[in-house]
Length: 106
Image 1 (tube, one colour):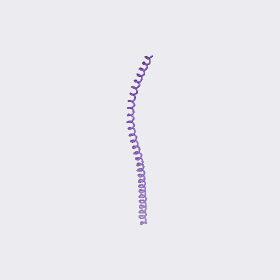
Image 2 (cartoon, helix red, strand yellow):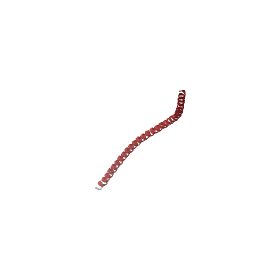
Image 3 (cartoon, one colour):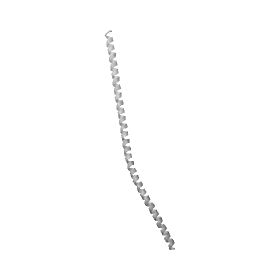
Image 4 (cartoon, helix red, strand yellow):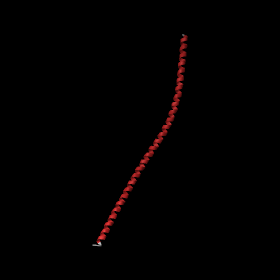
């Protein structure tokens, strides 16, 4: 019996170590899988962020170009308005001269 107890104790100790080692190995495997999933999620989020940043930068450049174009068109509009105002005043003046000429010729 004396020889059985140490052997039995050794067997229980070996069984305990085996089970705890396999539990640790399972924990490590689960943690590795968890890290892999987190890394994939990070990469997907980074790609989405990079794509959105690129689109924002592209749109910003497009808006700046369009604002420059708008400013040019507004400047052209202002010049055209001055010409229109001057042409309208000249037309009104010429019409008045014509009316006076008609009235004087009667």
